[in-house]
Image 1 (cartoon, rainbow, N blue to C red):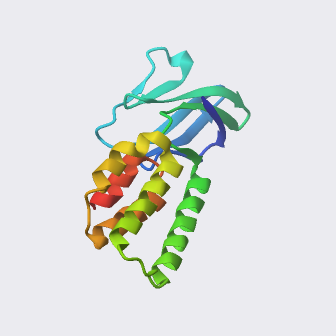
Image 2 (cartoon, rainbow, N blue to C red; image 1 turned 90 degrees about the vertical axis):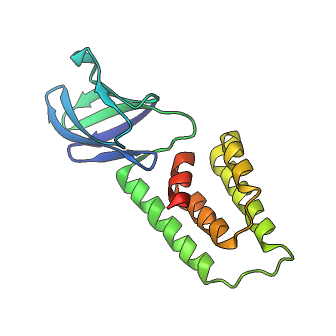
Length: 172
């Protein structure tokens, strides 16, 4: 369980597409706002005293502690999913975008097989970011040869924080 402190109107990002915002703090009671994909059910605990919400099948957020205007949230997610304070998530996205713009401005390095070189770079990036969980996606990428598609995948690997996020960005 990862524990993050938040105040009213502050948000945490879970992966690329789940936002949990502290809407209100009244004593030891906390109201959440959740923005998640439609296919992910958002279900509060049957026991209101737990102050726990389930998001989809694998994500849960629970109030661990309330101290004045600060709430400590315990977040449980799968290993391949990131959790960030919203302001940190936004900074990561900005940095990744700037890095992509710099990389796009550089002339391509000469390589006898640019598609293979790009696939190797993508595979290395996926493994560094997501570990062994990336292997099925790497297997999907290996037969591709279209440089335009491979460049889109490379951008997706840089900007996404989950494997599902890579697939979503790549397929746009």
